Length: 226
Image (cartoon, rainbow, N blue to C red):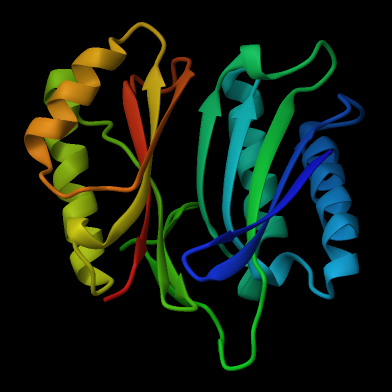
């Protein structure tokens, strides 16, 4: 278990990261990771209801399917969060089938409940959520085209539309995280993004991942509402 507490966007956050044990079914392993997260958050006086984002890595596609369903069952109701998930065995140790990163927003008086927006029709993935004046988007990707050249403009437009739906724009984005297929060129992606988006985004980070349903890129975005 890795734990970090840090200030960001005028708030305090708790970041947790944990790998599964490989024991039992994939659902057992996934739930055990979230049980450990619950225990780690308890000393702060809150639990999974304060989770705003999770990012999951799995060993293979079968595990990806089962772990996503398990995560959706655990993070339900007030614990619903934005998310992304990726097949990337290099992230896992020899035993684990699942590794999860979690981000929780430390509550303050007056926050109120999360404002959540599902996709239409709803999917396992939440489209966006807002809490504490911060807008969180699930990872956005494209399954309708084969190449990064074709997928990239679709992803950018989908993010643009979801930001607008949440009351923000690219100028309000505080962080964009790129989950890039390991066969793609990072410099080419950086040049493409700089040409497409002229906003000055304070934080950009990049992680290489493996194949999943032909996806070459997924982008997570967090914005501060104006």
